[in-house]
Image (cartoon, rainbow over all chains, first blue to last red; front, side):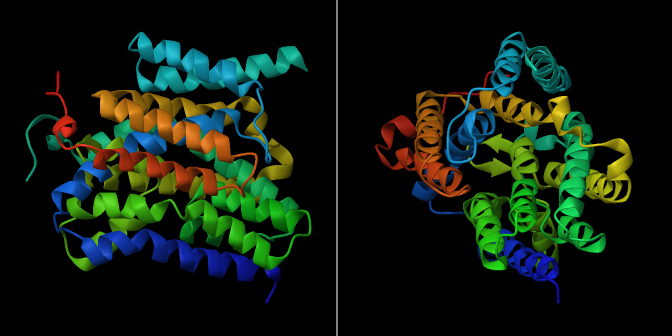
Length: 103
Length: 233
């Protein structure tokens, strides 16, 4: 079997298992109240981390590049209560424009 | 089963909520297909990976490691680390998934960053119908993009230069803002982002995100402040 197929099969099986773990073991059962309070904060903590890493993350370094103005423009659009479609398209547009201009 | 308002959302609302992103996901799928093909993964393996792994960052990491001649072990390790965040994410959606085991399994497989975030209703609750609608939409978009990239990558070129990489943090930001209902959630967000950025230069990809989930441990600090404010809308 080729390297690619080994990676595809192993990563696929492990990912399916990781995703299934919580819902298969705990599905439908209410978590203890203290755990619920903690889990409720997982969304803001993880989403903020995803914003930060997807905006500034490089290969083992933090980089300021064309993504930052795009995401800042998105922030302004969110503040102005623009629809999500406008927010996402604006971010891509600003980033693509900055890339063209600075190249 | 849920309160009125956001809890009444249907699977169609889930489709609508991720529709803005579906085009970006097709574009990213094309990028992945192009990269995987160039990395020597062949035609079928990248498509099967999109159907089974269904997690962009892990697939990109695996393909780029294979592309530069990295070992199978390092490609697998990088991809698995990047997907480790789905363990806590799975625990967070588990109480909202009340169906049979196969329905829970299906919902679990469709739970990725974007679908998880649009299905969130606050206070740790998630709408399984929104999760399903959003999940099926993104799954179809991701596979369609991968097929296009693998088949026609040399004709259409790599769309990553179009600014798609900014579309994802923009969406996550748009989903984060409504989550910031009280001081505690703002603190969790700040701590999560700070941990992720602080670790990025020093750890393999994936570790910063999984470590950032420790930000939610702020919930253990004191119980009195834990009551979220009344929802305004």
